[in-house]
View 1 (cartoon, rainbow, N blue to C red):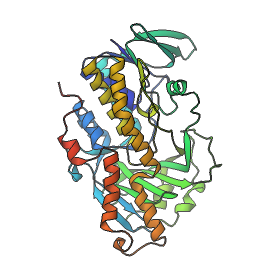
View 2 (cartoon, helix red, strand yellow; view 1 turned 90 degrees about the horizontal axis):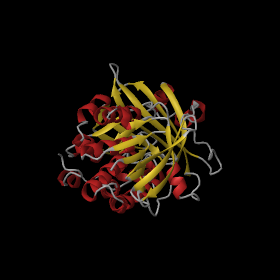
View 3 (cartoon, rainbow, N blue to C red; view 1 turned 30 degrees about the horizontal axis):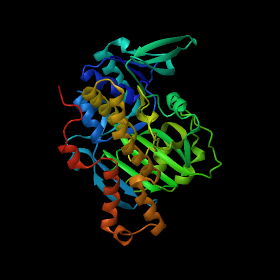
Length: 415
């Protein structure tokens, strides 16, 4: 009854911990030889934090991340459009975390090895093929030397990320990820605390935006994760998808050089970065089907989305929990995979499309269009109903309803 998983990212590791919780054995095959804490800052929504808390990891999350308390939207002139509380400040029973993606992955990796054993994850092992068998599924695994072996299990879960080889085999005509014209520069800076010291700031508009939030405290202030977005013509830089490409300040800092406000000094944060990386903002179209016989896709392999609305890692964790629940209910079967597909695919497809429309950040575009030179009072630009409806609409799409989360039963009942 062993489940075979490709990919030791956030989705694959969350699935392994969830399966262990309900007593179903699994093995993870990870293509890289050594798993390192790569990436930048991300946010975990309370819906995902609840799931990790029910896996017994809340204390560890507090050790490596910060509990986000508010989100603030502002114009390119620094005028505050609106703000709202986040996490427990918003009434959720669980916090929202701002956290380094690599540290989160290492936390999950450590938990998997402690709970499932060191042999639960085989590194330097790329899953290159699979096929259904009368008793389940057989996968082909290729090591770093190119030697192929075969492994048998009940089902195969492809959680192998944005450039999923399993997805490419299922949909060979899909082609490259879709670039919407935005290039991102992401960095980490040690700087002074801003606003509450637990705030997330969204400044500007879609074609020129700055996002930042603290991911750790320091004696002098905060470790600030930040993102600069700039929109370019369709022919610009489409084919470059090196996630470790160093960023050059002169390529984007001039566009933000005047964004120094009394509550946030954007150019100073950019100039003092410890490191900067550049990559395109890309996603893929929603798929008509994830589950195919005794295999299915999960996480970014199933639904890569723009990093808007803080939902990528959250949705991967929710995928893992729902899939494990269905295996608990229906057994390790193709029927369980199909029920998971039926529930999760429409939800994540809606978020992918909402993020293309800039998600809750679209309020920035509305304000920039109506008041390109700034404003004295936001009420002169947007009504209170417009502000509230923008936030409420995305929350509904992304499953971020406070009462809904607080009052629903656990996806996997605590044992």
